[in-house]
Amino acid sequence: MNVSHDFGVWVSALLTLFVFSFLYRDNPLYKFAEHLFVGVSAGYYMVLNFWTVIVTNLWDPLVTMVTKHQAPFSASLGDYRIWLVVPGIFGIMMFARLLGRVGWLSRWPLAVIIGVYAGLKTTGFAQGDLVAQVQASLQPLLTGHWGSSINNILFMLGIISSLLFFFYSREHKGVLGVTSRLGVGFLMVSFGAGYGYTVMSRISLLIGRFQFLIHDWLGLR
Amino acid sequence: MGWLASLQKLDRRWIFALMGALVMIPLLFPIGLKLTVSRPVQMFVDAIDRIPDGSTVLMSCDYDPASRPELVPMTQTALRQLWDKGCKVVVTVLWPGGSGIVDQTLRGVAAEPPYRGKKYGSDWVNLGYKAGNESVMVLMGQGITGAFPADYTGHSTSDYQALPIMKNVRDYSSFPLLVNISAGYPGTKEWVQQVNSRFHLPMVSGCTAVSTPEYYPYLQSGQLRGLLGGMAGAAEYELARHEHRGPATRGMDAQSLAHVFVAFCIVLGNLAQRQRGGGGGA
Image (cartoon, rainbow over all chains, first blue to last red; front, side, top):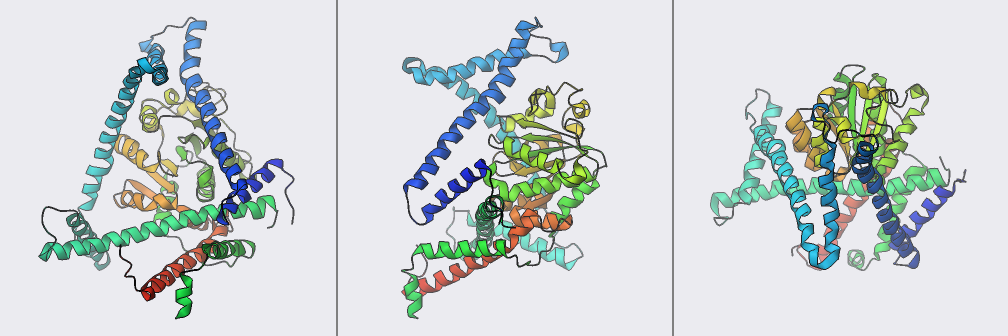
């Protein structure tokens, strides 16, 4: 046993134990760790975004332009830094929400953000998910190899029956009823796989913390 | 079957204690349960093996410390595999909490004896965190230096003396492969939608177990060339790379026992519910 002499490791280990103490019952030590985490995270993200976004992308290029007397719009050099003023102003307008009467100004930058993201998401989904996935779903049922043929037939049955389960314009009776029940079976299998993977993820977190306590803190190998 | 009825009143803290013991004991006294390399993991290994030696590869590490046990082992093994091929690695981070842990992980591998000759700026560069999610991905398609004017240490990405690796990096066409290590949003799904589909950059993904089922369709469709799912994927990757007793492999005994325990609890809970007369319905 070779207990760590690192102050940071001790702080981390004690905070881990404080959080684990919630499993017994809610207590002040857990509350302390929780509040500390929220406060530190908020502060960290603010500082990180200030230095990696505002300073790097907005402040530095504009200051360089002014102090070094560089051209604000050198399209031939691929330099469009004067345009940075526009998102800069939009960023300031976001804070108009705090000013009551001119709060409506914050809707403009929000509209731009929503518009840009809607465009990116829609085209991304259409290209990456819709077209590519539909294309990949068109599998030959008979491949000449019994293993892959069974696999493809099951795959096709799964897709069709699962899709029909979500067809609500007719009562699920007769052929539609049987097919949709088959679809429920496929969906249950996928939920089961999802649950298994979720358990794995959560257990991994526990293992990670225990590995930290055993190896890094207590020095047990 | 009175004991089944008594389970209904069992204090849940006994379950927590048992789970804790089942995870702790194999970490202290490893059992060495057998692992095999699954097809998606082998595809991941093969995809990296197929790129030309000495290529410059883009690696996006989109996670934060919460996913450390699952994703850090993958990052380490992937970096080792790339460096073993003489590849240069350009690393980006799209999660605000990730830049520190990613830098620590990269420097940890660079400090290992076989890789001590790898020079920062020449063999690898950490471009750090950039806010913007999908918009950063699209912006990188127009130019990596435009999206990341400076690296994690503050060097300008246009300063080829400090960062010679950036001399040959323009946009996605500069890379033969994207290695994405992803904990969620933004991550693999967004890289597939915004980059793989638009810029046709081949990619492989290592992700948290919870997001693995969502990405399997991308593997089946060929949009992903390989997939590592959670700690099990990381452990199989270590096995495929002959990294015996790696951090993920060491956790797999505990992982397996915990899963058996969860399955056992589910069966027991259903039996107790049935005896009580409930059908398990709403």
